[in-house]
Image 1: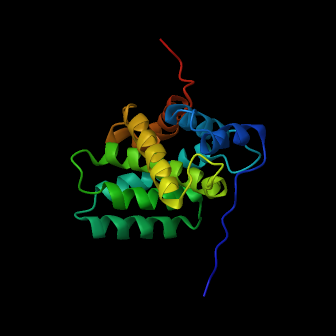
Image 2 (image 1 turned 180 degrees about the horizontal axis):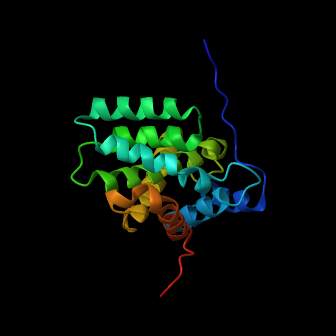
Length: 192
């Protein structure tokens, strides 16, 4: 039987700013999302933005959209990842996004929203349990689950505001697209 250990976020000023949202109810969900994604891209190692921007993630999406059904999409993506011969957090998140997005009217948009929603879920899950209790924003596990869902939903909504690449340009335009979404989540996108 295997065990897993939750790895908290690095102890950096960026993550302390993000974690304030778990302790202080005056921090809006929008601000929490911004701080979480700022910290995620500014840590000593494991930049989630880079992991999500890998062409292999776009390849997973392309493989999934070519499948006839959800089971075929999940199987094809699993085989594709195995053939790559590498594992990454980004690929694990992509597999989850395929499962959640298959069969939607716009599978590319559904995948990208799910991808960022799951990535946000991962980031929140690392630290939120340490802030549940009488002094935290979430007093109970149920409140923590609700807070996590609220943050995930906001990440998903914000990601959906950025138009994904056309299917024909998925792999070529993927990393630029991911950078735009992350900038949007951080609230640092360039205004025109």
